[in-house]
Every structure is written in C-alpha cells, then in structure tokens.
Amino acid sequence: METIEKGRADGAAQGTPLFQIHDASVVRGGKTILHVADFSLAEGEHVALLGPNGAGKSTFIQLLTREVFPLWREEPPVLFRGQARPQLAGIKRTLGIVSSTM
Image (tube, rainbow, N blue to C red):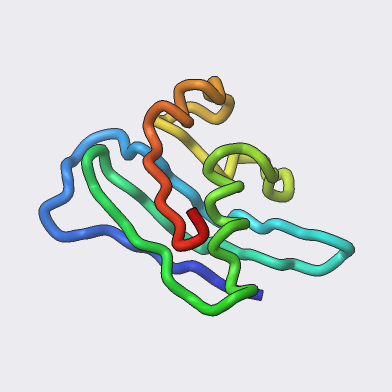
C-alpha cells in the first residue's frame, strides 16, 4: 500500500483548490491499495508522480478522474474545485497527463 502525503508548492494560489483529497482509501480485494492522507493541488500548480511499479501512481490518477472511487466517508474525501460530484468532462479538460508509455 502506498500512502501519499500532502503536496503543495510554496506560493501556490489561495482559494478553492483544483483538487483536494483528505483521508481517501482505495480498496481492491479487501486490501487497501492506496491511501491519501491529505493532498491539495492549486489551480495552475504542476506535479509529477514518481515511483516504482505498483506504487499507486495510476490508481492516484484514476482517483482524480473518477475511474476508481474511495471508500465512502461522511465528508466526501475527493473534491474537484470544491465539488464532491463534478462532471467527468470538466475534470478531463483540466488534466494534462504525460506517461513514459505514451
């Protein structure tokens, strides 16, 4: 299981984050394969996900794009521009994903 901690660059824009994840767990086959304790990404901020195979990079992207869902929480663990249920088209228009397999 990979745990992703908070990642925010100094000087990032204030206000509603583009993505905000808090206490999100993705479970497959009864095993937690990804847990994001606290992550926030501001509009215009760029990040790179680096790690070995099986570290959870693809699962993290799928969590952002709503291809996988976290365990249910009273307070939604994943927000896009402050919304718990954004439209998928809006998310995909916003992201630019580059992979070494492309």
